[in-house]
Every structure is written in structure tokens, then in C-alpha cells.
Length: 475
Image (cartoon, rainbow, N blue to C red; front, side, top):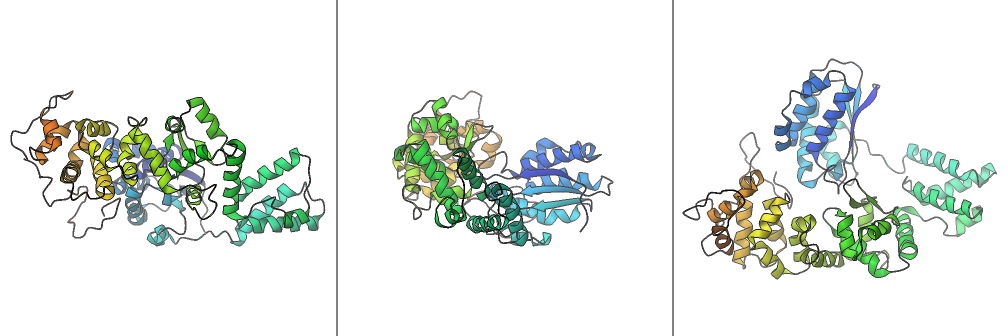
């Protein structure tokens, strides 16, 4: 194996952070880091049109920001790029990222190396077989050895006898199931024992439930402590906080949570701080679970009915908030239709979809027209029978490219695609916007919402001979 002189750039994808799950932002970040760590890299990156990159594809960003500048750098010492948790990349762009890495890495110079990590249960390892992926198993000998060293270091103050120490390490190693996440709770428990000036015995480790077993045991301990100690067993607050967070499609802000719980911001922050082993607040003031797998555990109602949450309860709480006190919040504009449909409040969704002012406000919060359309198409029951909603969704879908470039075209696009009797056409025809706009004299004069055309695909560089679609992307 060739030696690596240094880590030149790194990026840690995080599923619920829009700054960290965006692959184009990842490429921009990597290029910026390499400009500081690799001589002459910066001068070649400066030639790139960054504005064009932000509007382009991941493949183009990777080629122009990483591959081409690297090819122009003369270097012999190896530099490592670390890309962690590829499975947490934004789903709609994940395929593009994989394609960019799969096809583009072969053109990078010898001095540039990459380490990629992802969860093994995901399909990503198969897509990246060109990198010869190696599975890091919790039962791997090296991983277990690292755990043994760590546990021994933490337990040696409790066991002076070497044989007893080795036995204690083996007991906790078995309980940990090879998860380094387990070490965090071990530290907490050992610190608590030291504060009480207590001790540990092998018999207690074997027979008493001092330490939990495995990931499930860890989460049961953490959520149980939060419920019983921090919340004093208040099931209502527990459910109103964690059920919405578990089903939310993006992290809720501290302000959002304060509204959901009818608390002021200071009290909401204090409550979140009490759950510091479960929740964290980012620089963007949004609240996230410390581990993605915590959401899976919370939603598994078979584990512990008191500590887990129901999906339908989460959607109900968020739907009522999106309809009421949170109606003007960015989260509600981006996700309100989804939660309201999941809660069966189709009349409210109909009012929103046929309200030009609501759609316009959503666009001002950078909500893409196609996301509004897809939420309605996928979650509004009986959409085909409700022609006004159906046509509104189709018109927004067809207007995606135009409105993404200029949201001020909303009235023009809707008038050009909907008939005179449609509620949105009537509202658009009498609209007086903040800027001048072109009012069509004949309608519909664009591709009609009734047209079989579903969407115009852009960004491809060759003939499209096949299309694969799922809930989140077109390939």
C-alpha cells in the first residue's frame, strides 16, 4: 500500500442538514480545502465559474472542481480525501454523486486518494465496486482489539487484579456488540459510580443490569433517563417533542419546537439540553438526533410502548401545527401538504393548493414547485377525481424550470397552463405583483395542465433512451 502524506480534504454527510447532505456543496468544500492544503491547486480552481457550478450537475462539479485542477498539479506525495457517510447524502442527488465518483475518479492523478464510508446495508457499496470496498464489521478482530484497549483503560481503576480486569473487559465487550457508541454510555455510568464513591465487582457485572446490552440497550437507557429524570414521566411532553422530530422530513428549529410545546425559546432550549445524549442543536439553530438510528429505534413500537412513538401521532402533531400557529413558518411551507395529507386533512390541503398567495409565499421560501406537486400527487387521496387540485399540481410540475429561475413568473405560468374556470387562473388574472409581469391574452398558451407531457427533463448531454423514476428522482 502506498503511503499517504496528509489528509487534504474531508466531508461528513449528514442526512438532516441541508449544508452537509448536498453533494455540490460537498464538492465546493473539498475544492476549498484542497486549495489550502495542496500547492498550486488554488490557481487552477480560480478559473472555474462557481455560479455555473452551483446551477449544474454533480458530475460537472466534480470534474471542474476536483478532477481538472488536480490533473494540472505536479505532485508526488499522496493526498487523501475523506468522504464519510455517503448513505446520508441527499436522496435526490445520491445517484448523481455515485455516478460522478464511479465515472470520474479514474481520471484523477495518482497522487490523489480517497476514502469513502457508508452503511453496509445500503446499495452504495455495490455501485462503488471499482474502489474495491472493504466492510468494517463490528466483529472484526481489529475493532474488537480497539474496544478492549479502551475498556481496559476505563476499568483499571476499579479492578486491581489483572485477571479480574480482563474478565470485566470481556463482559462489557460482549454487551457492547462491538459498537464504539457503547463507550459513551460506559463513561457516563462509570463517572456516576465514581461520584457515589462506589465500586464494581465481576458478580455485579454478570448479574445486575448496571450496563445495557447493545444498541437497543443504549437507546432504551438514554430515552428512559430523559423520560423519567428530565421530564419526570410526562408522557405528553415526551410524545409532543419526539414524535414530530421522528417523522419530520427535515430538522425542526428551536423556534418550531418551542411553538409545538407552547414554550418560550429559553425553556425549549433548556429542555433540549436535558436530552444532550439524544439531541443536538446545530449552528443553524435546528435540532437533530445525535444518531440516525435513534429515529428507527423510536419508531419501532414493538420495543417499548412507553418510550417509542407512533408515526401517525407525529404527523398529527405536525399537521395541526402547520395548519395553526406554524402556518407561516418555513417548515410548514415546505412540508405542510405532506403532513396534512398523512393526517387526512385533505380539505385544508385543497385550500392551500388553490390559494395563489400561499403558493407564492412557498416559492419565496425556495420551495420548488415540483415538490408541492409531488406531495399532492403522492399523498392526496382521490386526486384524480378532484380536478382542480390535480390540474394545479400538474401546472406547477410543468412550470418547475421556469419558476426555479424566476418565481415572479407564477401568475404567467398558471394562466398559461390552466383554463379560465380554474380558481388559480381567476386569481392570477387579477393579480397585481411587486414587479411588472406579462399577462397572456389567450389561455392556455403554454403546455396545458391537461397535456400528457409530465415534465421536461433538462441537464442531459446525450439522447435519453430510457427513464427510471421513483418517489424522489428521475434517472
